[in-house]
Length: 108
Image 1 (cartoon, rainbow, N blue to C red):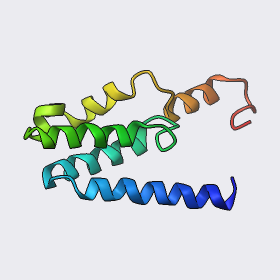
Image 2: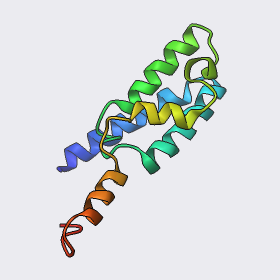
Image 3: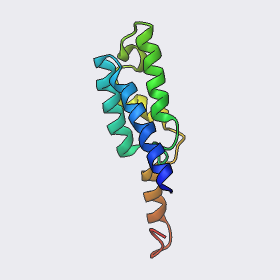
């Protein structure tokens, strides 16, 4: 990864967080909870893929149409997140694979 890639990544992240900051307060709160949850249990490529920006797109559309955030995702935020990443490889999968492998091969 070059310096240019790092700088571009930071620019993209700052633009993303600015979009989150422009959401209505209830959407921001739910987004931050979703982000925390997904960073703990979510897919390996969470930041490299379009999952988080896609959530912001979805929230912006919902806010623009006058819907409350829970009208969009339901009352169980974790279940909504689980549904989003159900077919994605997670860190839990990597861990399970490492302990199911031959002894001494974990982490290689």
